[in-house]
Length: 269
Image (cartoon, rainbow, N blue to C red; front, side):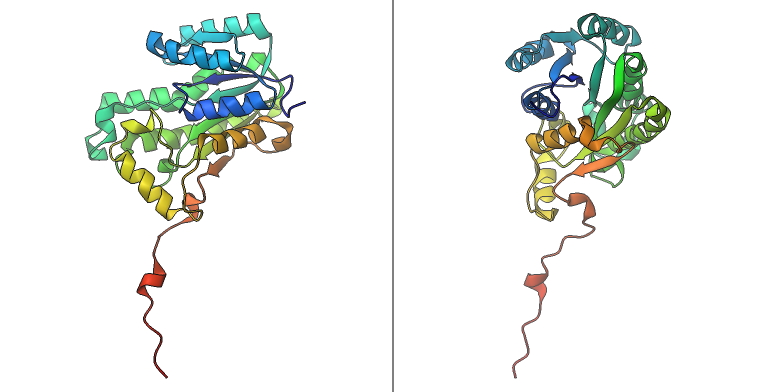
């Protein structure tokens, strides 16, 4: 018996086997959860279906989260297949590549709107019609990043979108608490994924992150997945509206110095 045996989880945002969303999916499956997935377009369907099959998932549905009609159609299929479910995972983010390099000042109005719509509003869009289908004690989990609270070069408009996403988590947690539905987010450390590769200077970001963390390493998809299991399970039954950092401690560091190299030699006696 796994920690999530008998639970059903729908996951938005798996792109390939290097996605953080896939790390979460594997972890939930390992603890006994039955999974469902969305995909956007034929190219992603070809990647997502084999992954879904590998965890015995049969619910694999098309959905563009910028279109309410497609979200409603998806949940109709979810209701037909499952009735109700227990876990909703939001791992969706997108911005124009041009807005993820250079200066934030040059963010276009259209680019800002797109990033905020897909990366932040989508949490509200997929939550609202899901609420009637969620069981008592259900858990909603979103994925965020430290660029929401501190400036990360080139992260630009995505940092603003993640800040909005985190505010959404808190307001949704307040709204849905009386229904015994919890809403939290995981702030994952820098991980090389298809999504992160769009950020200018990602290789330098990964290296800098590794050097600044107290653990002197970056985190893995599997480590984020383990935290998702905790948030999805009864072990976190009193945790809601929180942003949990899984970043090897990067968020606690204000400045990283190699003091040993700078210490003066001990005076001769």
